Image (cartoon, rainbow, N blue to C red):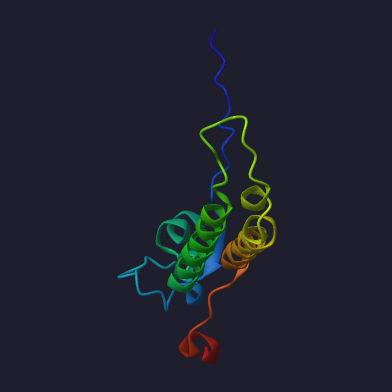
Length: 126
């Protein structure tokens, strides 16, 4: 006697309004139901991507700012372990400027991740 395990993955029988994806440039043809809706599976395969080109550019800008901040922070090393160069280690660049760049880079990156892409003028009129 073998018991058949129930399918724990829910079936995506939910539907969405087809107007949500009508203006997406990546969709050639979407099979719509008779009532003008599409299935959740179809929407997940063909729906618009939530991360736009502007978000990607902002994300790369934030990464570049972070890299500049970390580059400004390196240095101050010496070959002789008995030497100590206080003016190199505790310079204004390493103590003040570099952390400001790093925090600014993280802020730009966070903004890039949270920013919603603008809707097209055509989709707002529908």
